[in-house]
Image 1 (cartoon, rainbow, N blue to C red):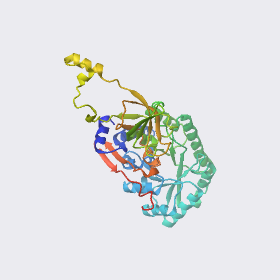
Image 2: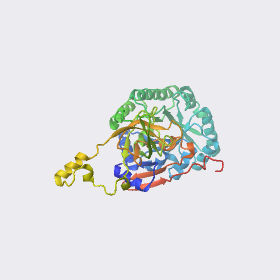
Image 3: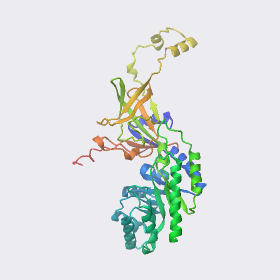
Image 4: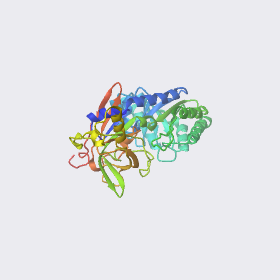
Length: 428
């Protein structure tokens, strides 16, 4: 988004606020999808990255990963059909699963995270007299999914559960992977699993849903992204697999991060021990960059200067006389104005939020030119997680507005500022 677009927003809406650029989102997802389609690969949006974007992504991706009852209700509000949902997550409760199965008559896809999940899904399917499609999640060595051998056991015992249809496997091991060699090792492991199931059990694994966790550059020190080249290398790795079934890549951060902007205003400036501290009306409860360490890394920030109050200047001030050039005219006057214009001053600011904790430092030693109280800082690439992942209820600060922007639709308020004291108090 351009500065004039942010200025239009700031004339109507107060900070802090999130602004999601739907045009930027569409362009990025279309670029990614175009690369995947060449290899016949589908795209799944992990909506936990930013649930606000679910409706905007409806025409752009094939699937949505849903990890909670609340996310499922968001999909219902957006009118997404069950056939496009993968119901994932470690804590699947019987009442929620039963409601989904009975209402949707077994449509959609469910992941299996444990043997208890496996049995629960079986019982719910039998009770509703429907057949469920499942993906067995294989663990990467944490609390998610099941280990290699238990996954094979589920395929081995599939005939004992005729109400369940094991379509394939799901795998996700983490985010912000910088080394493609790690992806290659994961794909080899998954390929080997599918081959073993085929050879040992005579069962064809027909589907693989894989979350590559591709890297998004958040900080100025990180290498620039080369999107098509990155995806081409990934497609080549997938092309070397023996697996011939359906492949879906699950992405969240990689799709959403670029479209987000977090607007926060400088409300105070002070110097302590020679250090400049800028207090903003936002903070770490609303802004989060994966990989930020002790606020030392510099994110991408756009600085929008506030208009200086005319009352700050003497009423009888004459710019030419103030500079000492008297009655100079024409070219001489122009040159004089340029010569006497105050030099721009860059200073290193420590940008801190409004929370009563020393942890609320967004970034240290950020270079700002002629910054002052009232200026707005636009923290870019905040389309993933910031809007939901922060400690947003801490200190009972209001939740910020959420805005959509597109050339066609203009600026649209999708969530107004929300007070949180009613959530944080016994009075309700």
